[in-house]
Image 1 (cartoon, one colour):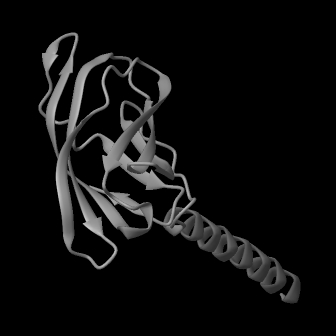
Image 2 (cartoon, rainbow, N blue to C red):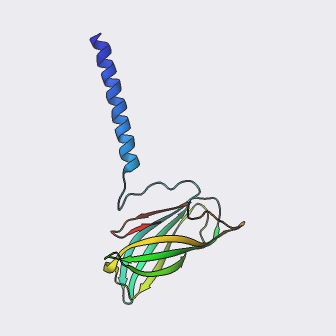
Image 3 (cartoon, one colour):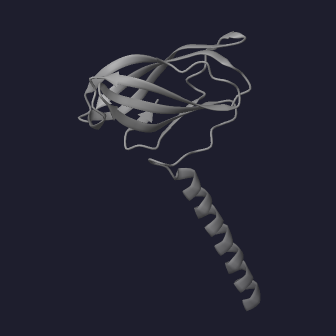
Length: 154
């Protein structure tokens, strides 16, 4: 009977350890953590902020995991300053986005110090067109992450 109890204890310990490891992997996150994008999604990563003579330059890595080309992919972006106050709102067009392709895009924020940026919010997708026409659900298929201390979310 003690061998059976010992075996049951080991099986339960393995099951608990497996559950804890799965939950830990599912809930891991934060700056630098990169979740695998869902099939058919656009994953945006704020990769780098760089000061330049007129302000701050932001580098975005856009990973189109879908099988379609986006002829237009225009975002409504809100920049929050480091104190949480909205600094500005602007449109950012990342197109064209080729299928199954990672692309680096950059945009410049004139008169904006990188150290004054608190976060970016993808407020909406203003325009989203593929070869088959306008798409209605592009925001749902968008994921965000950041390798910087500045977060990007939707």
